[in-house]
Image (cartoon, rainbow, N blue to C red; front, side):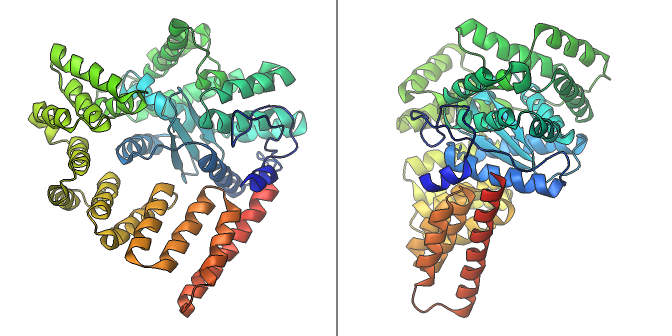
Length: 480
């Protein structure tokens, strides 16, 4: 892996932070050899998807199917109302407590789990996604890469590398950006004021078209500013790469007021549920989450506090508390899909597999094709000792979400328990390719081709995977 990383991140001595290990120094950063603004969208797509391979291999990903489903639904609620022409998008959720989101040419939209906690409402969270969609639709990254290619290409390479570093380490991104700023003026690092204002304007229009409050965007930016000022922290990564001034916030508020009014959407509890999940997940000590939500449940007796207590109980293995908290939830909450899936998580934690199988099968019938339902149904089958039955479920998930690295990993495990050795090899190859571990993918192909009693169809698939691995290695070396 280290050999591959060195072949990918070359020749840009700007930032002394290693991607593989932020505590070690490195002078190698990705260079961008492709002139983006003059290239086709297909070239941008290839570059972005290969960049995503590096990100998946370097940054901790959030493998919470409920949160991913929520963000994915929110993103696609905005996309039809955006100016994006190439809608081949991929959402990547990074398990990182910092307040950050990013977009990379090729349709990559990234969200740090900490941004969900930072948002005050669903519209505020949606405003960040709309802003990033605007950067993609206007090809701001492509324009800037072409500009820097002509003038100072190393600076933008440092910025894109900083996205990787910030995703892998909460502290790394700021250090990387500081190093880059030391090499060039900050004005050359960040998006131009014109691009940021354009992303604000177009993002707000997207919000209005999607029947969301455009004022949520300046409110979100102002909230991020206050968060680090109040706590005396460094600016969130989002503000480092998307500089926000008081005048810009004021201008965007004025712009929002001039837009047509929107009809308020019916109130849902989806945002509260997902934000609570992330608050529990990001708490450093499980006991702290138990104490916080248990206290809130006693003092306020709100559904949100009981739901938080349910999740905190599962995480701290206080399953009696989790069960009591579930029973305290009102019927409206108990019937919500996310709460029913949380109940399924509790049943699995309790090792009550018969009840878990009954609930997951019922949800599969009620919500056919639902990503989080299928993920937890597959997990239920696997944990219940029915690994072979989980295999087709994981394969069905991967039909719609082919870059879901967690499902490829779990599929390999399930295939192993089911005795399908070729299936194990194939799933592992896909996993290694998606995480940029090309050497391991090629090694896995070699192991697979040595298996006895290979059928001609098996060999054909393996040779296709081998050719794909060789091509991806060539692209990575060419692009980075």
